[in-house]
Every structure is written in C-alpha cells, then in structure tokens.
Length: 344
Ligand code: CUA
View 1: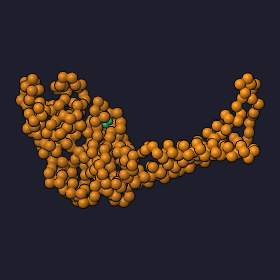
View 2 (view 1 turned 30 degrees about the vertical axis):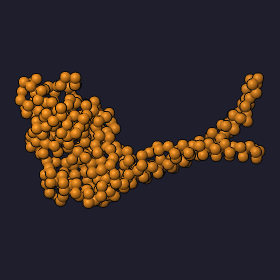
View 3 (view 1 turned 180 degrees about the horizontal axis):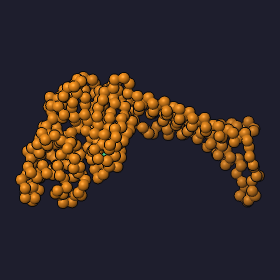
View 4 (view 1 turned 135 degrees about the vertical axis):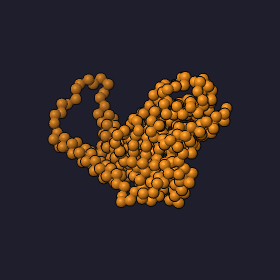
C-alpha cells in the first residue's frame, strides 16, 4: 500500500471518529448520575461507546476511501475481479470482535456483581407496588419495635447503601429512577431486590416501567435523597404523625395508599384523571340512594359494586379491604367525607 493511501485512510478515520465523539459527548444520552450503581453503569456505557467509535472510524474510513478511489467510470459495467478466501483477514475479523465482546462481557459481569452487592449493613426498605401506586415501608427504630413507617414517598439518606425488596400485590410493575440507573420488576408472588447507594442530594421521580394497566403512566412516586439528619427527621415526623404502620390519619392513608395517583381530590392537591374525581361524592351517593359514608366505604372496598359513568370496571384494585387496617379504612373514609364541598 502506498504511503499516500495510508495517510488518506487515517485522515478519513480521524475525521469520522471526531464527528462520532462529538455526537457521543455533546448529546446528553444519560441523566446525571445520582448513585454509585449509576456511575458503574455509565462506565460500561462509555467503555462500549469508545469501542464502537473506534470500529466506526475504521469501517467508515475504508468505505469512504474505497468509494472515492475505486469508483467505476460511468460506462464501465464489467465485473470486479473474483476474490476467494483470505485466511489472514478471516482470522482478524473473527478474533478482534471476539476479544471486544469478551472484554465487554467481563466488564459488565463485574459491574452487575458490584451493583448487586449491598454490603454488610444496608438500610432495608420494602417497596410495595400495586395498580397504580407505590408504598414504602421503612424499618422500625429498633429490633422488635413496633414503629415501622409506611409512606407514599421514597426518602433515602445520601451515601448509604439501600437494599430495596420489591413486592407486587397484583400485576408486574417495574421500579426505575433514571438517575439511580438500577431497574427491577416487582412480580406478584416473589420478592425481587435492588441495591441503590445515592450519592447526590435532590428530588427525583420513580416511574413504573412495566405496562400495568390504565393508570400505568400515572404510577409515579416522589424520591428524595437527603442528609442522614433529614432522613431521621423524616422518620421521626412520620412516627409522630401516624404512629406504627403508617397511621390511621385519613390524609396520610390517602397519600400512602396512592389514591392521588388516580383520583382528583382538592384537599389532597391531586388532579389525576384515571379514576373518577372525589370532590363531589355527595351527589354520587345521592344518585346511588345510600348515605355518603356508606357510599365512600363501599367504593373503596368493593370498587366494582358501582362504577362511575364513563369508567371501566376492574381498573381500581379491590384489595384495599385487606391492605388497609380497619382504623386506616375508617380514617380514609372520614377524610373523604370531610373533604366534600371543598373542590368546587
Ligand atoms: Cu405499574 Cu406500570
């Protein structure tokens, strides 16, 4: 090969490599990392991207060179010379990809293993998914204490390894906070786990990423990464406000059971439209010919008994009679009854 040809090949390769690198670096392909696990996932991403850019530069240089150099004249319709077999090239194009794929596999396996390792003493939080809400159960203050906290918001102390155990009460859901990188399904009947070590204070959003029904797109929850002191203060405030098990205060139950994910209710500040609005239940109760309280209670424990006009049956879970305590149910009914007439 002449020296001039080699120089042209190198120039084409460097140019296309630079263009590809600019696209890779300047476009924000990934959210800004907020966990150790996401940092490792980003490493795999960039490791693979660098390999891809090198191969792209090589292949595009050869193609551009060949197109320019070996272009046929417009009136030339003869066939090219027949070429058959080239052991050297065949070995190279088999060996190089094999080495690269093996390298990516090894790096990925190491990252997967590390991202699954919660260390010796992780904070354990139980996550319960159900159509269409998330619930989080934080550990009790001491072994055997009866003050576990349940909330509809995920609050995590920064730089503390957290092991989430995921459960589903109905269908398959999936836990994903983009800035944390880690993702796992919540599957009915089994327990899955996810390790997260948050590294950056801030507010994030948990999204369900498994199509789970009509309200799937609203199945979100707030995630806060806070200092250890703020985390302790959050738990203390929840214990104060609710008592063990999330409390029977109706407002807290409305939040922790995720009612606002589907229903508009002015006192709770929710405006979702998956299910019927809850601001004029008196009218609906009157239409059904029962007392307001009875109407509200039945609508929670047996949602298919009366389905509001314009809505489908079997969308709202009929599991609340089991998942809420009697006190919580009473509190929720009272909260909804008291809140009538505030919405307009
Ligand atoms: Cu739960 Cu989608």
